[in-house]
Length: 362
Image 1 (spheres, helix red, strand yellow):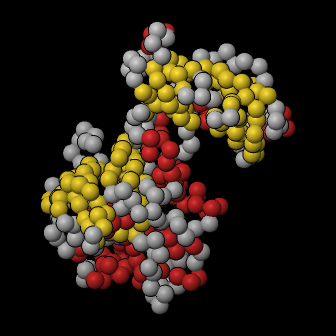
Image 2 (cartoon, helix red, strand yellow):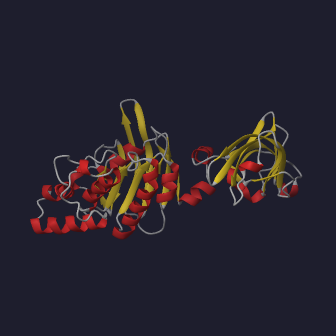
Image 3 (cartoon, rainbow, N blue to C red):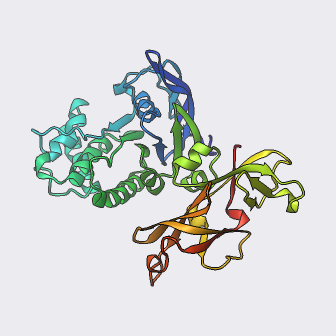
């Protein structure tokens, strides 16, 4: 999982159980310096426990955590150069914005002049200048989140941990706050580790994504790489929608690239398949074309439209090829729209090039 330069955070063989329940299974991860890394997975996959282990809130049963060259696995939380922004923000309602931000500095007994300078810097960083005297209840949800972020960043941590930071925000605010967080991170250069179960959030914000399943990291890499080249069926299915073709390699097919499925389809891949072996190929819905005539692509199948969903910038369709097979297709809506020309029950062709297919474990 190394990315070239020495990682700011290196986790090796981290395991944790609560009673008889194993939550982390020998997790290893290299976090690049100055990057945003998203821990992405379903509820119960171990994301928050891993975050808490890094913060020192949970003691691992085995493994090591090295932060900027120093082993911190046994160090108490207050001795780690790590801050954690909680999902609830945990602001003190009786304190002003400025006093909330300065709380950690007071606990560290920083001189008053230093506190005032750092609080002013943090307020400017999160665009809350002039609001230092307000109380948290006088702020919007997005503003409260920025106060919580400023309270963490004012301590100048080596790594900032964010546990579902957008969970309390409505959908309309989430995209704007995501951009703000990324912009702030780029300005300060602090390494962010973000926990989320929202794949869109992870893909939009992160430089690297670590997909977790059942206490393990099953794939790590840049968002495009993880999405375009998943290494397991779980990753392929968890990150969006994928159409799977399972079957046997076809002997004698062009360059050994043919796959025959149990429901009578033959699919052509760009790369040779293992001879006479079981194989699985996947294609994303947006890699496919939908037309009333044959598409002329390397793979083309006639079918009947079963579902049409208009989603603003795109249309989602389900096409039935045969009693055992349906495909999900995404069509970008152009100037004249798509839904008006696509009707349930209509006969169409679904096509995609061999290069659109990705090989997955059989």
